[in-house]
Length: 148
Image (tube, rainbow, N blue to C red; front, side):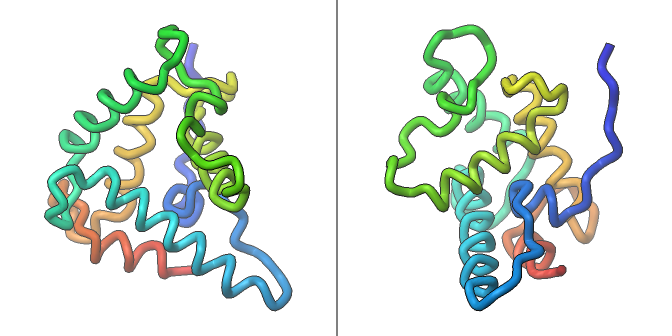
């Protein structure tokens, strides 16, 4: 039985589950790094680089990437598999990716299936597609992640 959680707000989804309530002088730099990471995530999913993201486009890319990094071929990713290829010295980015992984893990089993990853992208598109045309533009995405 799958228990559905209420949809997380756009800030949680878009900034990959990172805590944005930070204090101190590093807060602005951290927020900018979170924003840049989110934009990079969008750009990676925008396979044809036209500044528009559809669920079908993302699904195709995610299927290929998932098959490549599911090292043991069990149909789910561990955090270690998900972080595959990320340089070890990028601890800041690893935290962001870990937050994204956690946000995708709907059943909280510490594994992410392709279906969970696709559902995450679908929620992001649904929650940030300002004109509700099923196409998330980079401009819509940027506007959504700029809101606090």
